[in-house]
Length: 273
Image 1 (spheres, helix red, strand yellow):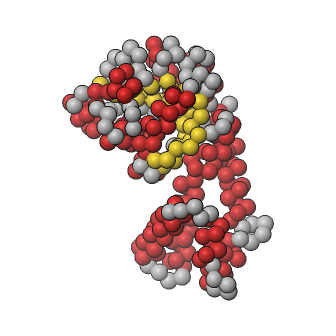
Image 2: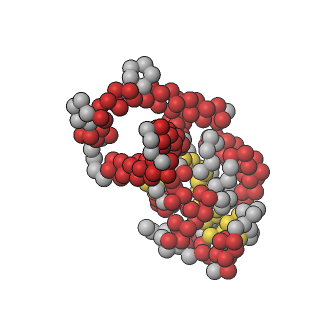
Image 3: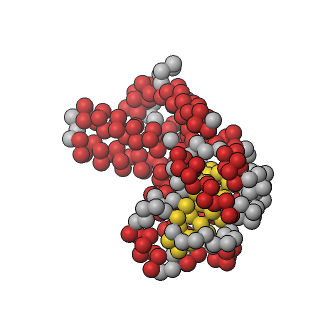
């Protein structure tokens, strides 16, 4: 990937918790040098302190004209953080936020309407490089800005681009909160296995490997999940018996999932107000 603009002008990373660290480590793996980064974090980890010995600028003065500033702090900290970035609000620096539930309009209020602002929604598997991130920018973002942000987020997984910011709440409900739905299903499957006589550790091992394998199979080609389900379901077999329960009309898994995703999306809209 071509990160020459960052090599020349630098990148500011505000907040370096789990997600910020995953991003930083991914960028370093892709060939960027530690001295490309200015990291602002009130409680720097030992990992950051070690990188500072190699040239990373830790809690140092902002560079005069960085290519991009990545905001990786919690939403409730934005009110404190954004005023500190006022020196970068000349329209030359791209702002990339990964804060959940924080709309672009809020950044425009603090950073100015002429600032290019990109909102991104990664999910927790990004911490191990297996995530997916949705991106959308304001009117000041040009194709080159979005391409740079896209490449940066690919350090922790796949990326998709949205047509408009209104789609972000649906993304939150599907992929942002989605890992928790899978983990809950894994909990339920483990308990069900124990109820059928399996030791808990064995049931959990079966569940973990089954979910990981099913995900890998779903990602291995273009076959839709519906067809994969059909392929594994023999007529009058054990899987069909189970699916009759999960696909009950009115209170089956499909209806529950639609309700759950809608609830997450609605909550995202509430938080954005």
